[in-house]
Image 1 (cartoon, helix red, strand yellow):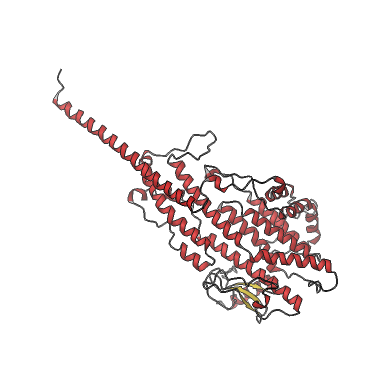
Image 2 (cartoon, rainbow, N blue to C red):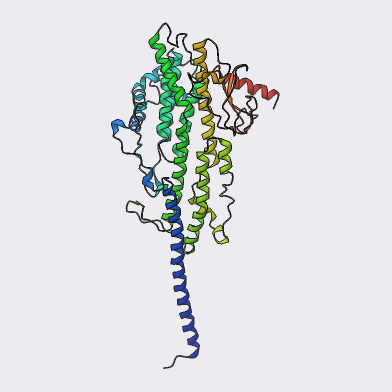
Length: 489
């Protein structure tokens, strides 16, 4: 029976639709290969630069428990007594801003310190070990990886800070500085965690030790130079302070931690793209089904999304890594000035899925760089402060210039990380009290002034970053706040 003419049109339409579908599928496959090739080329470029990018690239070197500082820190955290059994004093009651011993509660503090002798011993033992493995391997999907225990690490640091304050209060400055060295080593160990969170927690812990040093005079005995008197005790104190100076002026670990965290966040972005668009060769999903695209439309334009992510990924993370390598804030800020994912231009079809693109690009903010350079400045100022104190004890008077500290107390005058011209940190011995200072985020030498908001908080992008050489930072800050309230700058 002949086919009615009108059905010939339906047949032709069906054939045309089938050809179109096959053409679209072929184009989709070709498009997908191009997108995958672009992403793989970016992947190969990162590897050729010697940067970690595979999840397992971030795993630490194997280390035995007996040589693993992280193992002993975790043990210390597990036996730590958070609250004194009789007085009820808690570790978290330590003043966070001033780092001062709780006034009038020295006996309660002694009880809490006594209850934590094993935790303190383990932390001291960990300080002498080089290996660090927190037991948190990095595998795909990286976004689901367990992160370190922030609260436990910070609480251990607070215990060590409390012990430093207690040892100082009972006349054992060498013990105080040894405990501060324990905090600095803990911060370096936490910095081995590759995520951005590890960097931020490390900075927070390290700041505890640095701020405690800038709050309290070292209380050096007259015989600190070892010329007479109790030479053994004086030598122990001098050794502890020399170690502190060496640790403080060497802040390279902060830069390395930031670089590692940027590489980690880039790897998270790449891993998310692989999982979202089916490149699952490196995934370890533990038997769970792979993630699927939420809509057919997204699956169709997946290659375009992959191309757009590769396009944004390269310049953004290249700029961040270049900034992290810079020695000062002005140079770093120029590198990251053009990174703006919120206002990035995307083709119309991908603009609708801009939030998906942004969620896949785990790009660290400018705040991480602010923290890096502020901590570097504070460490260098505090290290120089200790060197000035040692000079004054040895010579009977403070130096007139920082150059007098070289080479007996410092190998070189620390550079100011906020100065664009490589200028060293500033020293004003004629100020009342004498001060050391950095020019701060605005890059302008304001003569060592601090600027405060009306609520009393320090303005970070105005004024300078200052260390007072008499160790009474809290008193001077309170006085300056009151003066500015009466006469706003």
